[in-house]
Length: 148
Image (cartoon, rainbow, N blue to C red):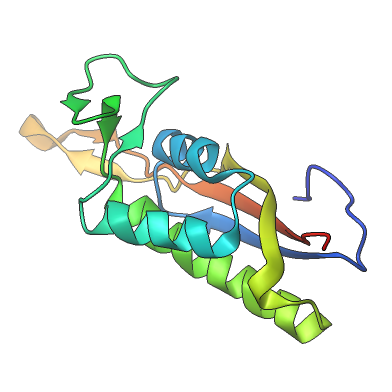
């Protein structure tokens, strides 16, 4: 596992979430919504989604998805947002440890990729079972200090 880009270590901070038990599809939609925003603004948006005050627009994975007020196809992926908020705060603390200005950061890279599934079985009738795997997600975050 690695990062999609090799940023300048003087101006950036990184964090990586490996094999997180969250939906890869919902994670990709939340990443699309937050990419390029200031860290404080992104954390406020995540808080609003967790409180179900703001919906996440689903652009790619929007078949048979209910429309939400002011967004169109969308939803409120609370588990994804809680996990992503923890990881962004972790990356922000990494930036503070490196000596970067924590109030002057923006999200440069935020991407979610499918992780390896956790294999499981679901019991069925007549003593049989069927595979029931848990999907996992690898989450990559790179924060960059904005220029004055």
